[in-house]
Image 1 (cartoon, helix red, strand yellow):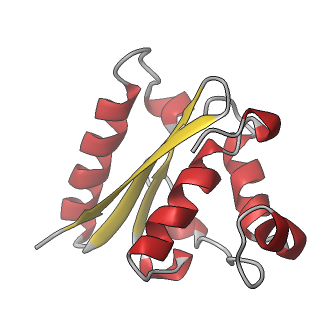
Image 2: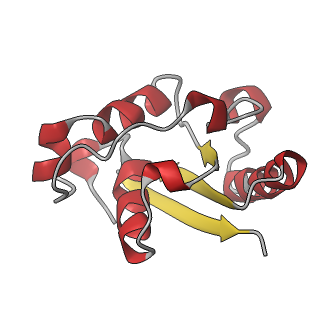
Length: 128
């Protein structure tokens, strides 16, 4: 979903419909790789999901989506510490999520990307 008017929240805009389609909540996801294009990106996304007005007016939810447990989020550090290779950051994020899930023994994870111009992407991964 493209939302240039709210640049930086691409992960929020892409994860929310993904969760809705799969009848999941933020709390149902055990491991998160939320890509940050800059240091405050993750904080902005977390604040957006926890903001009742934003969730009602922009995400069309009944209220705030809630919070992501920080222990489940970017468990080995985010893209700033691990790398944000232009053109391949999506590969790095997804592969890191899969490896972290295996190491931690978690079943469900989401990898996100913030893409220039207000775009975002999200992938739900479930271990079977």
